[in-house]
Length: 352
Image 1 (spheres, rainbow, N blue to C red):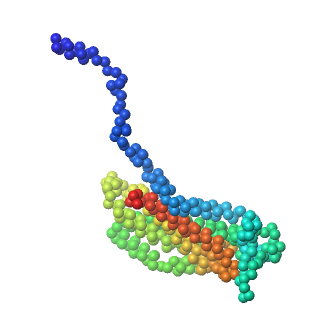
Image 2 (cartoon, rainbow, N blue to C red; image 1 turned 120 degrees about the vertical axis):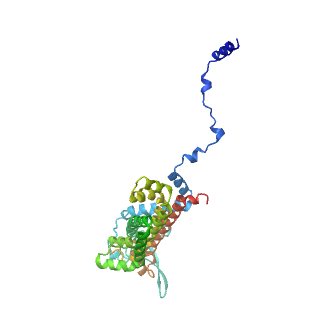
Image 3 (cartoon, rainbow, N blue to C red; image 1 turned 60 degrees about the vertical axis):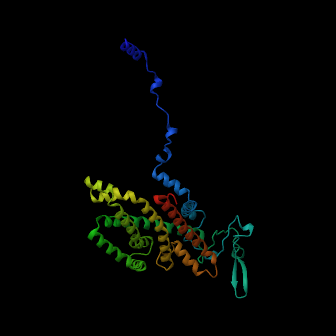
């Protein structure tokens, strides 16, 4: 009788859909899905744009790059056009001259005192406007400044990219193989680093024509040393890690491990070093152009414009101001952007 009663109770119960509903306990376990779903590069992006100085540097780089492309075409003058009848004219802007600023007048210092002169009025140049003024040959400084910024940016970026490829490959190979290979490659690096850059440029000018390509080659031969040292240090730190050992165990070749396994893990320091090397290349190009080993006339760069303005600094100081400001902003902006990128890519600085 008891057995029959138990059987009747078991057959009497019919399961319902409510017995198979999943328990919604996400609020109870409190899993942080936001951090888990966030990718590395998204986190880098967020961290970078939280830093005000880095954003300022990036905005200034974009603004100067846009002006370097569009600035020379914003008026009717070219960077090489000369007009000796309109030489040494002070800055004049149509929208601002009524306010008493940038009206084409300048103060000339003589032995008897200071005299205010407006060559636009004296030469009856009523419809002539030079936004940054004109130089000793009557060339528009606005057009030449942005043309020079374009040349300096092209040289700096090209040299930095080439240096990254050479230095990164050299350092990774040296650090991975180690032993005698590393010793020989490091001695070669010390020899290259010991040759002064000015000597290399002077020798290149005896072989090649002065110009943009010559400066890029000169920077390429010397600036890759710093990149190779960073790449070698990162390789020495990572080549004994488990993922490298696993790839080697599975039969991966040396160059596959170097460029497919290790390189993606050090891309952060590489990019940061490239950003820091660009202002160095800009300064080096400006120095070479300043001492007469840079871009030949009538082409111009920021360094050659500063050199030309320096010759007229005591009489017409406005000629040297625009290229100095543009070069200073470029170098400052790249350094600020690189510093922000370094902090965004470095996991150790997350809590700083």
